[in-house]
Amino acid sequence: MTDLWQNAMDHAVALAKKAGSLVRDAVQNDMKVMLKSSSVDLVTKTDQMVEQLIIDSVKEKFPTHSFIGEESVAAGEPCVLTDNPTWIVDPVDGTTNFVHGYPFVAVSIGFAVNRKLEFGVVYSCIEDKMYTARKGKGAFCNGLLLNVSDQKEISQSIIATEFGSNRDTEVVDKIFSSMRKILCLPIHGIRGVGTAATNMCLVASGCVEAYYEIGIHCWDIAAGAIIVTEAGGVLMDVDGTSLYIPDST
Ligand code: LIP
Image 1 (tube, rainbow, N blue to C red):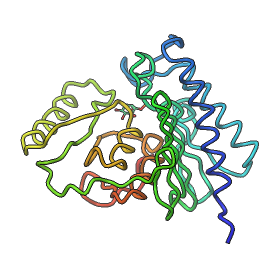
Image 2: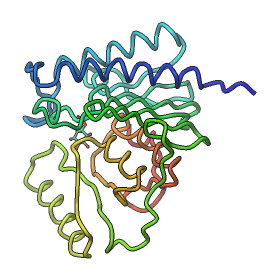
Image 3: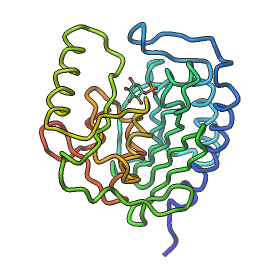
């Protein structure tokens, strides 16, 4: 049986590579930093240009497909996941890192059909690490098979999280109180590379036992989600129920 979506996945990998090289070239040069929801929620011309490049290419090759992109939604496009084949894209995941030249920036491309993820591509473009996963066919980093950690003891674990872009003191207090509770379990350590997609790929790689973040969006996690599950991991909402990507739109 021909793999219906392999052609789309191959195109996603090629797009991620092309977008990643544009991001690498622009790091620290694209200093036209704009603000979104707060003074620390940054966006640049590169975010917008990369997303438009991906949209134009997808529209040309797959004209009937739908698109959810971080910057399109920020510009007022609807963020609704339907049964239609849908590309869920964060063009520059880790924009703050990008602006500062902090070397973890990812192009994240998820793809869903009938609201189920079919493949995910996360290109950590400064590291030149291409993470990919196709439903039922495993997860890979530069072609090498990925498996999540087999560590069963949280006290022997590293947990990843991020601080997000909300600086309301009550939100910050909640973030730190959660981190304090987890750190004092105890655990070996808390890490975060500044991009949700890359944090999820580190879980899939087995070097981080878990990643959590409150207030994340579907474009941040769609590609990473299938990379984690294809590496043997699980997705969970804060109440312990399984995470359903459309709920995070
Ligand atoms: C980022 C996420 C990160 C979160 C940041 C930001 P962006 O995505 O990857 O996990 O903590 O606030 O949302 O905005 O760089 O694409």
